[in-house]
View 1 (tube, rainbow, N blue to C red):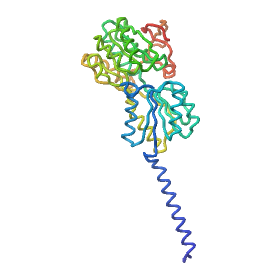
View 2: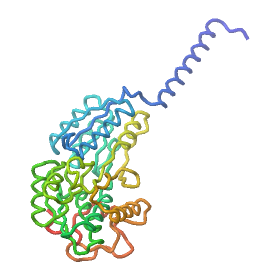
View 3: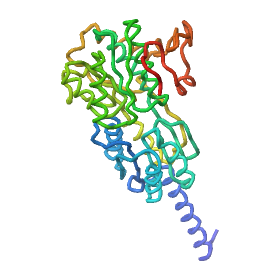
View 4: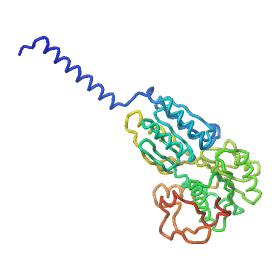
Length: 364
């Protein structure tokens, strides 16, 4: 068949269009380039807190290193109106995904997300989601069960001090998991709680540690973000546990171990999902098994038998033969909450607003 010039041009044009379409499809399948994605992070504390924010910022750095993505962060952002302003500023300045890393950022995150439906948002420790809002957290209470076991073995006074931030379920779960594990070893042991109503205030945290030691605590643990309590423990000759990261550099004699929050893999995976176009709204609550909750090396003061006991708890959680909230469980009022052979489910844990037996003081 002989084609005239017009037909030749038409066929060539169709081939070119097909090639262009295939190229566009291939580009879409491959996702966007790293230089086209921008990730933002909002922190409640300073990156130098050596605890919660420090660990989140290591995750941000992992995103830059592994994916080559541009990231920005804003530190020491108060929960409330300031958070909303900062989140909106990030959303309006070209960020494709924004991680808001404190419970009090939940409502501001959801509000701003409605205004920017094309931006992806990730909120840590919250429970409100949307098509463009994911939630993620770690099962910190699993780590509390491990360190509670250590405290049960090592406290000579039977009194442990617990420095708590805010009376939200996440913090209450940790207090209860710690107490239950400790009292399995020493049924008469008690936990004294001081609420400091802040995530990061070294002065308040240090004063709380001093007050608890004065009340007979020979081990201090915390759900606050600075190493101040550990430093007090080191000075006063008692033991302590670090929070969120390895704080042994601040208290080499006092730190027994530390729960470590490892956000790096999650942050890398979620930013990569934006890059390859597979991001969807999800809810993640991972723990020791998944690697989101880890531990610093045991301090020299931890005996081999105690290390073995703590390792057994950790392994039991990983293989599913042990749950930190296995029954029977009795609350602070002496009422049985759950019986033998059962454990509290996630729904109860997510709304926990009561103390177990062995916790002293009232829940604020």
